[in-house]
Image (cartoon, rainbow, N blue to C red; front, side, top):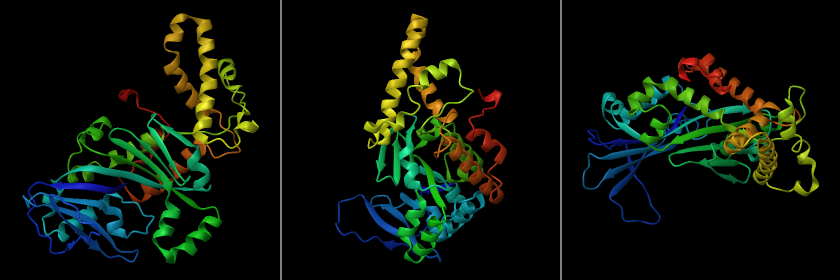
Length: 358
């Protein structure tokens, strides 16, 4: 679950005996002295970054990937709650502070993610991931897609390729794994600050100790939010379509086979599909009543993205397949981590909410 994090000490009582000065090719003026805290493992060395305020030495910032620091930079393992406790104890030891001091220390930015095993190439899937809460989207080489909000961000990328790039010894093994159709998609959310945690209904998590105590909430946050990812694929007719749905979607069925759109970016194709859907939707609502037209636009987008979930082409990787892969990933994680309450997480991934939470 937890990966990168920024920990902020306001009254640091330890020492930096295990730290090394950070080398900088270009020295810049800064109010902070910069160090790195290395740790070796059989999966490769990794360092956390440590900053010490020049005017107040008790102000110390530790940042970086706790997962990589514990396991090494070329690993597919995710931190369980017990792993997080282990890395907290090792970090406290390395900084020469009591674990209780680290437990009471506040953090700001925190990355919450999980690896998902899939049978389809990440390069085929990532371009199809077109939306998450209408956040700004950036697709990099079909290997990574970003969605950026004001204080919350989503990053989805090819974890298999990333690990292979970091470890030359593993490249051949990973190449064989990919050739057999085994790929790993990394889905991670970054919460920038307290505001982001509050907006995500986790405002009670403020310290490192809070993260450990409420680890199950991190799983639930992740599961709920991956359900909001929109994957665009071709649509196909279905006998369960209502006449109204058929009216709206018929213009989109077979749309991907139109030659003039063959080389169009998936996101542009998604926008064009929505434009056609919206025109049909507004035309229908205008014919019903003026009142219906007023709320039509907000309803239209919800129904549009729901269509890709309800009527995806069975010949393509789609939201239903992703949901199945995510559920399997959570099942595997729940076997290793008691904090991952599998039945609750499945409901979140499927968009099922308890009546008392509505």
